[in-house]
Structures are given as structure tokens and as C-alpha cells.
Length: 114
Length: 113
Image (cartoon, rainbow over all chains, first blue to last red; front, side, top):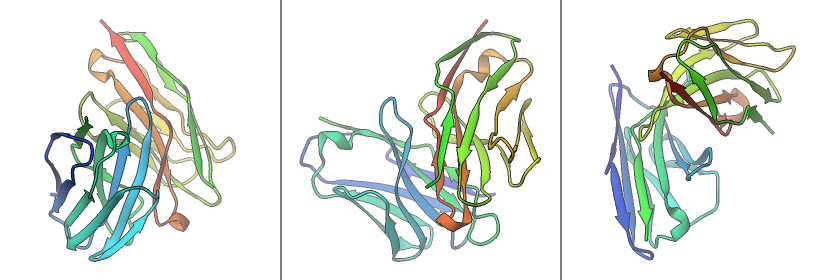
């Protein structure tokens, strides 16, 4: 069966510091991968998605970036964090091709920027 | 563009009460529709889905029917439990948008014993 992991689970970082969040998927090949942010009291905002290694699409201009160095690894980064980057970051995957409409989410990373 | 509108919460019910959470959508084509549930401090779990008109998705006593004529996908449960307390998200996915999910804002459900 497929599983999705995110780490760290929680993170407290000062403003201006760098960020690296990691997401890995097991049990499937060539998944579509997604990064979402959930700010306090708000819905989910799609940040990035990837349909293959090195292929990243950005949905919202901001100081975050994403990379996909391996087939089942998706990384969210920032060079300098802002207060507004605080939130709950969720990674998701779906199969490619038929069934790609259904996304499965990881446990999330709670980021607090102070 | 696509959009999802779901009833604003919070919703507070007593155990064994009937639950309805309304969800309507706007899409350019023929989307798949989903309900996700988020328990406190956790990620989202897929609760149920429907991929075409008149399909009924069901899971754990929850049901929702894809109504194309009213562009709706209301979530229902006949008898809620305390363990159903969570935030519920309605969402749609469309092939023309690379299957990106469009979410509603979420509805917080609290069930009291």
C-alpha cells in the first residue's frame, strides 16, 4: 500500500532563516505531487505541483520554492522566512493518468515563524 | 474558474443527530467531487468521492450525491458520533486544470455527548 511521509512534524524558525520541508511517498511510481498551505482559520491554498522529476509548477508567487530531486521526493524551501509563512503545510500525491483526480494527503508540518 | 462554496460553521450537534453540510460548486467541465475530513492536528483524509452525475459516494455512514442539475454535493450522516468532530472540506478536481483540487473553506463540526 502507499504511504506518504512529511518531516519535520513541527518547526519553529526565526524570521529571515531558511526552510526545508520534505515529503516522500512510498509504494507508487511517478506520482503527481502537491504542496498546500493551510493558514490559521483559512482553507487550503495550493502552492506547487509536480508531474515528474524536475517539473515544478507554481500557483502563487511568494518567497517559497519547490524541488523534486527524485521521483517520490518533494521538497519545499525558502531562503528567508517571513512571518506570513507560518501555517500548516500539507503534501499530497495522486497517481498519474487514470485516477489522477484523487489526492492523498500526508500528516503535515506545522511551521511557526517568530 | 472553478470554485466551491460550503456552509459556514461552526456546526454543533448532539450525538445521534442528523448531519447535513451543504456544498455547491462552479466548474467549467465535469469535475470529480470529494469530501475530506481533518481531525485536530492532522492532515486531510479522503472521506468519499463521486466522479459523475448521480453517483453516490459513501463511507463510515457518511453519504453525498453528485447533483449536476443543482451543482451540489451535500454531505449527510444519519446519526453522528462524538468521534465525528472534525473539519470537513468539500473539493473538486477537473482534468482541464491538471487535476488540481479546489477546496471550500471548511466546516467545523462539533458533536457533544
